[in-house]
Image (cartoon, rainbow, N blue to C red; front, side):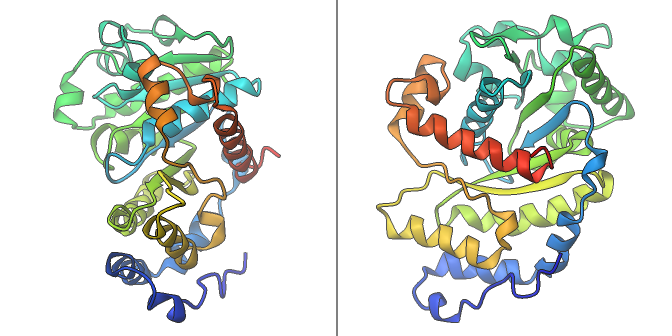
Amino acid sequence: MELEGAIKPFDEARRLLPRDTLCLIRDIETLEIKGFFIECLGVDFCYLSAVVTIAISSQKGGVGKTTVAINLAHAFGRNGSRTVLVDADPQGSVGLSLTRQSRLLAGFYDYIDDAEVKVDGLLVPTRMQTLSLIPAGQASDYDLNGASTSGVTSRLRNLHGELADLGIDICIIDTAAGLFGATADVLAMADAVLVPQQAEPLGIRSVPKMLEALTRMRIANPRLVILGVVLTMMQEHLPESRDTGKALRAIMPPEMVMNTVVPRGDLFVTASARGLPVGVMEGGDEILALFDRLRVEIESRLGFI
């Protein structure tokens, strides 16, 4: 794929951008970014497994990971794919958003700790027949210490295999912030990763570190597809938020920034308080359509359509 010229001239626009955004530009430019993206885009999609595992990961917290994970899983399930949403964040954010009993249930960390635990005993059904949840579960030595072992790797492979045996099509994993501990282990076995990033000047300063870390991650897992960055918490009425999105798109090849943008809105807070995906809320039709568009983008990048 020819990416010459993918990084557009930005000299004129630089003078109009906040200092933090300009710092991001300089940071990204030091990454030899073209070589990174050429490598990421040269993925052989035939290596995708029967169950496609998509990690939702970011270098920092507070970027909307859980919101994206929940609503994207809902979009896949709504489209007919048998989907499992796994809460791999020790804080249990997915579980707390969808079921207030999640802290009482066995889940991901119990599975990692105990070889006797089976996936089918962890699945929590939802009102949608094609969507199930695996909560974070109880705190474990692995959760607290974050030390990866060969046993952890084996259990994660088993998790993938058991989901395949159950006929699952899509596994969405909401990971903890940062790319270490359980998140690093998940990325080492995942098929793809989507990176939410809030459209705020200070927020996107973490993008260069995230890209460097994902480069290292693809050494451990060469089949990992970098789906790209999805902008979240966009506030179109704020010039700073709009400029941040424009700056990111100007620096990164278009293939590596999703066209779909997730806005900041009160409906997300209300949906979380009620334990529902935003799309099923009254007035949530636009958000429902938005995450359907994101699903289609992902399917296209994975070679499904």
